[in-house]
Image (tube, rainbow, N blue to C red; front, side):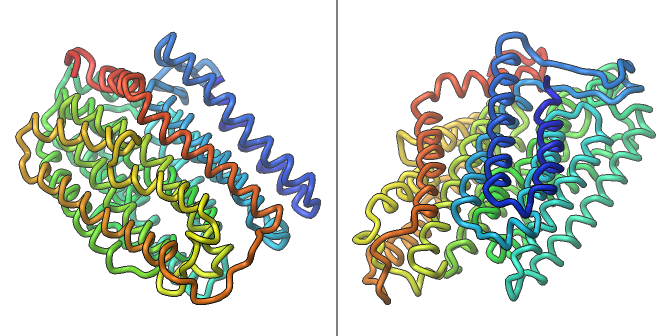
Length: 486
């Protein structure tokens, strides 16, 4: 069953491709596919929670010779979170996108994207992780190009070039790792490191893999593709991208680097990532402050928040991994919801530019409330999920006496507040520059459903902090066996 989300996404990608000219049936079938994946993802999470990691060998070929699916608590959490984001994103696309996008096959591309995402989170083999990366990157490239925005060609080109370069680095990393241990099965690689230590070839392989994953995570200095592509992408698609696309890179770093560093000599990689994390936090939030386009603001915030997540990983201990995992789950929900809120603002105000917006507080006060919940969570205000994510990150940094990290965590939060106030003042409080529609169409009003679902998730993660932290601690214990509790 752990491969079921991949199979479901593949089947529904083919079905939606065949049904793309049948509007009503297409939407119902596509939404059904994401709903089924969500139900299976929740079942996988419950199973892993109760029984521990689940492993499946394709064709019953034993590792390291066969292809394996290996889902621990980290993979289960990421699959469940991605499935929820995918369901909400599918609902949003049906509320906002017209027939021409359906005829172009956007829902089929969407399911292929999800197949790559689920495969990345479920695979137990390094080469197949590369394969799933290429599936999701190909689908995401066409989804970016599909918008046909006047600048989408430039954004698509930057996205394609940086993706190809990161894929080359990925292949180099795979080659060096295989030369070192003669296997690409992730569990086998970790066992070999525990028994025999690390060779120069292994360290070279890890360095290339870290480079590839940092590019995909859009951290400094590899982040320029993100603010170039997200603002020119269809807003509900950009919302889904922000929810899990960059998270695949961070997940891969957690899955591969954490256990290898714990038992090897690669700790010299951690200071490098620490420096990149701090730079990403600062430059990302400064880029957000400099933008007028709301999607551009949120895109730069993606890099800033990736810095927070990478900071936890770069600390190298269990407390840092707990903070990293918690922050990943929080950010998936918050950033998706903020982009979907912007999508509604675009529909009402006719623009995504802060300087050209205004009057939404009077016209749509409930939208202001839904946006405020996610914005406050992004800033780190209790009782929302972002508060606990930043508390755990600060605790981990204090435990390692990383004072620069502590100061920047606090300082960047203040700049995050300023950028959210920029949107709030410009879109909600400022006088409307033009007459706004009194009512939205029935179809657009359905966008409220995913906004409410994601806001409930943000609040649930915050109020359910003990349980979510326990899940993050289980991830740390799986990645760093024998290291004790955090």
